Amino acid sequence: MTRETCSPGRAIDAVVVGLGTSRGVRAAAVWAALRSAVPDLTAITAFATIDRRRDEPGLLAVTREHGAPLRCYPAAELDALDVPHPSEGVRGHVGTRSVAEAAALLAARDLGGGSLIVPKLRGEHVTVAVAALVPRASPLSISSACTACGACLRTCPEHALRPAPQRPTLIAARCSSCGECVEICPTDAITLRD
Image (cartoon, rainbow, N blue to C red; front, side):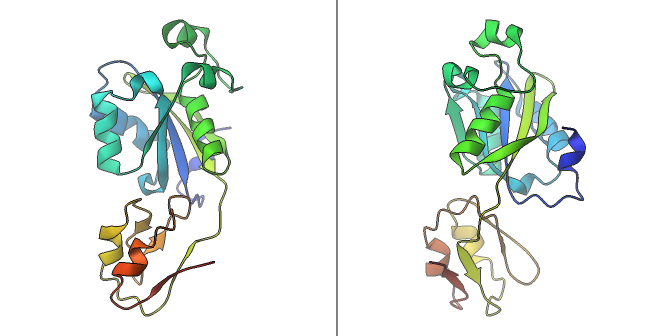
């Protein structure tokens, strides 16, 4: 597949981003790679990488600032997956033939399914791959009673709601149906669907 499959003209509700990094990767390098691979950064539902990079400061700074969770996988689990661009050189360094592509696919699987739409792209000490999640029905309904006050945006622990002119939009794949937005809404405009 080509990068055009993740172009600004295509509606993609939610994506997961697999990241392979070198030790000491700078947050600025990760942001630059993300911007080249994902036109709408608000669509990122989760980040994923190899478990040995779970404490990498540059990577953690990006995930904290963005707000999407970081999923970490052991090398053996990553290596068991068939990916479009495996690398024996990567296996020699970290014990798996793929980090970015395999992590994106595993995280997509864990979040309900998806497919790779951006194969690995190399940046400065970082590799990025993107998988689109299978669209799922919205667990919330936001009625016209919404005044766009922003209370739900500030309270959502999953950062699943995004500002919009009339009323917030929901990234369904991120929503955990916790009900925090329902509780905080001053106009009772938000309801959970059964």
